[in-house]
Amino acid sequence: MAEVRLTGVTKRFGRDVGIEDVTLTVPDGAFVVLLGPTGAGKTTTLRLISGLETPDAGEIAIGGHVVNDLTPAQRDVAMVFQQYSLYPHMTVRDNLAFPLRSPILKTPKDAIAARVREVAEVLHIAHKLDNKATALSGGEMQRVSIGRALVRQPQLFLMDEPLSSLDAKLRSDLRIELKRIQADLGATLLYVTHDQIEAMTMATHVGVLDRGRLVQFGPPKEIYENPASLYVAGRLGLPRINALPAGLFPGAPAGAKTIGLRPEHIAQGEGQPARVVRVEHLGDQTRLHLTLDGHDVITLTDVHTDLGPGDTVAVAPRNPLYFDARGARIT
Amino acid sequence: MKRLAGWTMSAPATLLVALCLIVPVTATIAATFVTGQGPFAAYAAFFGSGFRRAVLIRTLEIAGATTILSLLIGFLTAYVVSRAPPRWRSILIIMAVFPLLTGVVVRSFAWLIILGRNGIVNNTLVGLGITAEPLPMIYTQGSVIVAMVYLFVPLMVLTLVGVLENIPDDVIQAAQSLGAGPFATFREVIFPLAVPGLIVGAVLVFTGSFTSYATPQLLGGERQMVMGTLLHQRAMVAFDWPGAATISAIMVAVTLAVVLGMTRVAKRLNPMAT
Ligand SMILES: Nc1ncnc2c1ncn2[C@@H]1O[C@H](COP(=O)(O)OP(=O)(O)OP(=O)(O)O)[C@@H](O)[C@H]1O
Ligand SMILES: [Mg+2]
Image (cartoon, rainbow over all chains, first blue to last red; front, side, top):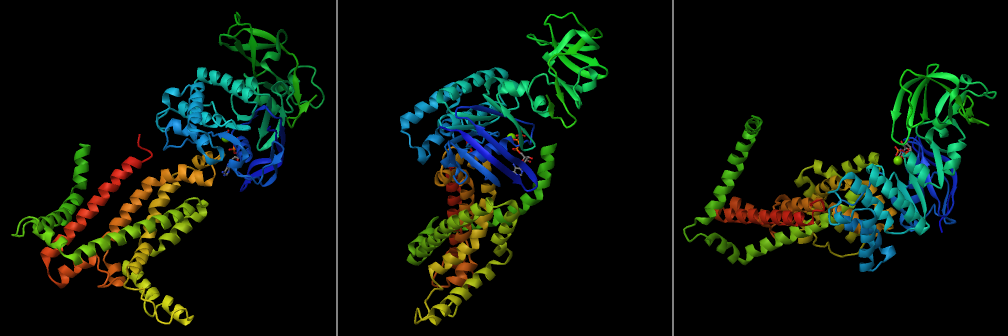
């Protein structure tokens, strides 16, 4: 069983900070999504856990055992790389079979063949099994790279933006598959993504990184509803949270500099008058782009709204979040 | 238009190669087939002589041994160099190829000093009382091979470093993170991806050592005659031009056969071929 515990883990690259003093406990069987802008340290975190990097300080434990001194092969993890990293000299089939053929994990031949086929079916690449790994589209390579991790059934999966090159339909199919596989195996999974929907629908826990520091860790609902800072609030939610001067609306607490309004947390028909700039019909929702005292505000409205550019609509906050001058949450 | 420009620009070089290489080589080889005693008489004479057959076999042995040893030493060195931090890498490469900056004769001569009758090795052995008499190390097949390996390892390292550097780190890391130990990673990933470089290196070293002259002359002498030194002897000492032409024709044939054979193997093993 694989609980993952990082204690004060720091990794620097010369002057650059990879991650800084990260302490984090991932419960066994959790599906953790790591969020953060580029360079925040997401890949570094996965590489440290997999053993491809050694921490400058701190302790990493998998399943209760400190693994700092173990090689990647000894850690029973499977990693999906951001750049696929397939073996260019092998066919798709051999790429998928590779982890089962490595000596530590002797598996009979027909069991390997069956397992490879099974995984290929799940990932919709069964028809490409005899292709060279280099003769594939980016999305196909990415699926082979996921498959290579899945064939092994380790105690811990590490996936670095595994669905980023797939089209929307395949991506939503594989989201469901990955979630199912993870639940079936009861494996722990750390997952890096920039995709809001992946984060909200798949995660049992979300970790938000800011320049190498873990700034909040918790269930996605909690991160969404109770962000510790303006930075965290901006990482989840689409359209993004509106950050406006706190004085724009009455009722701000002392010390508040910014009021954070999620698009769905804006009541219409009361409060300050705002001018409609643009109306976006997205099918299942309609977005209103407003301007209020020179500030852009995005909110949601009735799917069949009559509003058009130039109209005026009154808006007022509902469940606002307040942040101080440093961006920390005021409750 | 573009093609014409390309032709025009490559014309001088093409002409030079044709005039100075293709024409004389063709003429030399053609002459070996017109001897008056039938087309293959010159070759019958060569292979009929036990001495010359022995020279050919010795040359093949020396070239083969040199190639295999250079492959082993060169690969290990190149692997260490290619995985070193970038700052170290260039220093290591310079150190590895430094011998290339001196001439072949100088480098072979160095081995005379080391292995000779009054050389460093013998002086040490006798001085320490390990042997009573100096050992005959020079003018043996072994001394020629040692000097040739020393000569060709830098070339092999240069060839292989390029290939090994091109194996992305994360392909190797992917293998490690998927449960492959260092040995499996080497056998399944690193080695197959290095095969094209190994073949190019092997061809370069084999053809180079098969046709070498100065090193076997200095370290093998008359006793360890090889094709290169035999050719020199026939042409410049005995003025046996037809005999010399036959030897060069055989050398060209062996070299071509090795290049073609290796290209064949390379095509079969080339991991990137689809
Ligand atoms: N091998 C390395 N050498 C030097 N610096 C590195 C190395 N790997 C990462 N870094 C630095 O560490 C920091 C974190 O990098 P990391 O790759 O973890 O970011 P990331 O969150 O995965 O970003 P992205 O979303 O772009 O993949 C960056 O500032 C990066 O420059
Ligand atoms: Mg990354």
